[in-house]
Image 1: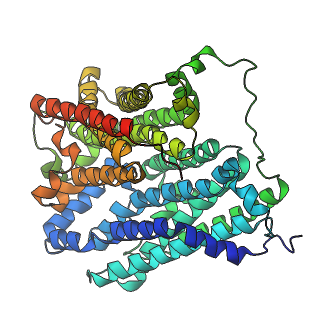
Image 2 (image 1 turned 90 degrees about the horizontal axis):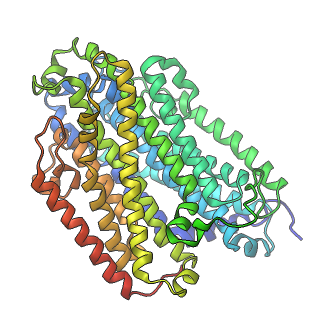
Image 3 (image 1 turned 135 degrees about the horizontal axis):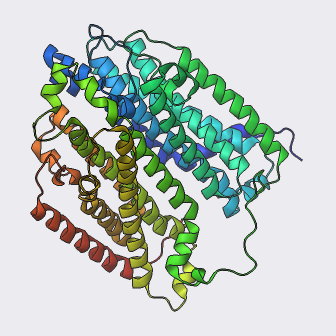
Amino acid sequence: MHQTYFYRTSFLFFHLLRRDWKKLLLWISLLSFFVGGFASSIQEIYGKNKASLQGMFETLRNPAMIALCGPTKATSKEFSVGTMYAQEMLLFTSIFFAIMSIFHVIGRTRQEEEDGIRELVNAFPVGRLSCTTALLFEMAFIHVVIAGVTTMILQLQHVPNMNFLSNFLFSASLSLQGILWGVVALLGAQLFSSAISARSFSLISLGVLYLIRMGTDLKAESFSWFNPLSWSYLINVYVKNNYFPLLLVVLLSLFLVGMILFLEKSRDLGGSFFSEREGRQNARKSLLSLHGLFFRLQKLFIFSWGIGLFILGAAYGSIFGNIGNFFKKSVIIKQMFLHSASYSLQEQFMSTLCLIFATLSTIFALSSLMKLVSEEKRDHWSQIIAMPQSRAMFYFIHVMFADFLGVVGQILSILGLYCAQYFVMKTPIPFFEVLKAGIVWIPAIIFSIGILACFIGFLPRLSVVIWGYVVFSFLISYFGPLMKFPKIVRKLAIFLYIPQLPVDSMNWESIIVISLFSIGLVLLGFLGYQRRDLILD
């Protein structure tokens, strides 16, 4: 009989660390160096050139950058490499911390309940709430380590105006966001009966708060204080170092933890408070086909991403009406962004926004294709593959389904952009011009799918490497001109080979070569997939 609700929590905590140490070590290394490793590079580029630094100050004040990265309270005199680094990195990397925490927590809670692992653990003499509490301790431990390592990395670079307390505040803000969203995921695991629903709840909450803060930051900044995601940058680090938002994150996390423990104590193992609705008595005929089955399994995921991408495009398009008036006040902005009198400021920003949409559509498509590996590890495909169903059909339907989602995601985002700018601009950008600027990125999306297909065919356990490549390609393409990366590094980013229409001229040779390489990668991946055994965790 269990002595307390938390009996043997410490034992389960150390068991989790032993079980996850490889993942956690990779997590610490990647996040810490990604967050803290660029400060000295920015110092070399902008710290010694006041004109360039002021140019970045003006750049980060424009509505498009505020919508993407959030605002800064720094004045022109207070603006430094530290404040620039914080504005560019805090919100952006908070989302990465949140996503990683969500996937880890759902995998260790609701997913393990579905797989029957939690039932086996609870059969031993452990407290009813010990597993959940141990996971909370693991999340707190790993984020404390990340905060410490990140602070140390920033401190060792000796960047002026980036002192120890400010570096610690910067790192602590990110780690606390990771903990908060891990707790949100844990709440989803209590409320919903499947890992897919719990994960979707967490990711949709993250996406909705991101979109809400875009509106509040641009039109009513004071309301951003009611948004937990905004607390990541409202610390005003490297300017006045406001610790109050960190306290808000801690208090909200503790409140949610109390709610989670109460809910878990009240429900049965495997149960939930929002049960899945009952299905049809007889399955639809579409489930008899592979593509119908795949769509049914990913229906919520597809609709969530589709709506999110459309809303994101509309959110960016809604600022096109006022963006011109803002830039008329800044000579530096004109010099930096008005490169050609032939194109309006909105058209030049549209080309950059399409890069953002392409990156998100790539993540959308890759997440779908990644299920080919994740479900295989859980032994969910063995019965289907054992049927008179060729591996070729199974593989290519997955790949084509991912290609389709990538195209749909890109079209939905640019459609949202077009609709919003149509209503806010006196002279809207023609639909055909918006469409061309968006769909030209589709070959890059399909190329990324081809790379993942190769990993699935030959090195399925290393498929997660594709996320690093997508992030790398985006950073090089988006920040490359500002950070002046070496040419050999820039050549590795697939997005740099895509012309940013309408500003750039169309490069059919590049598009055709990328498309042919994409087809070759998919075929190469199939050769490996056809020959290898199924993998099981």
